[in-house]
Length: 399
Image 1: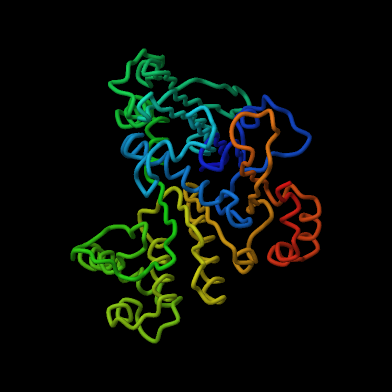
Image 2: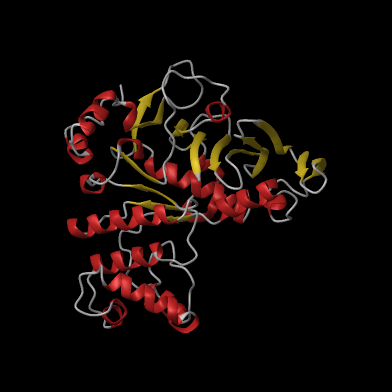
């Protein structure tokens, strides 16, 4: 599970941290207060243009780099090329530090550092990569390097040899994690690659559910646009009828319709809000769930009762397996009613010191649980929606 991330020079995310860092994970840094980590269900809130969408897109960019390559990832999803991704006036590189915490086969943390830069022609390439593992065994804790690359040269840990081997990249477009994660050289690298490359992103899908002009045929998974409901129904109806019946029964019990969800959908009489909820429930009922779902404002267009239902189903998804996680954004207080302070991250714009390189404005993320007042009000029974509506999340506005 993703428990921490540090992003530098990506759009508004000039130097933005959320969750655990590597020093906390390895115990190098002793703090008086506990570090707040990203939870199985995490919500991002904050005013408009504070970096929430950029945060999700940064995660999507890393996933796309592993699925394709850095040059392709730079132009996918209307990114417009690497030069448009880099924070203004930065040193023409972006970097990501991702922390994963796993319990199986034994408690351990994984670190993935990934840096992209561009050449004199503006073409992006992988500048450096690093994967490290820290085992939390009380009797024998330890840290080891699994992968380290710089400009195409480096080392990879080979499980069979139980030692590092020297490697050279065939090109600088493909991350080494993608290459070695598919070879099976290291089980940790394979699992890490599998996790990140299977992340799901649905951004700006406010009109979700409306059928796209798609060719007929079955699709195993709902699309990022949430617009291939008919294809998903066709796949499970024809290929896995038992799973299809179970999904439809469960979803029909939750949708505000007078008949089975599939029949209501095929009749063409579903309203836009119900269509969107249907698509989201299909996503959450996927029998092959994604390790991470990143959703931008999934509650938009839903009546408050459907918002409550969606919130419950999202939490259920995150609880079914230790490997399932959801990060979503919202501007609706209704979505926070069932959340806890340590599941809420508040984004704001902050002014950097004048002598720091890069843009003067950056996004900052802080956990709502780090505010003693928020914690005290929550313990007294005040819901997070009321705390948010009262302005207690906006104490660190741009100055």
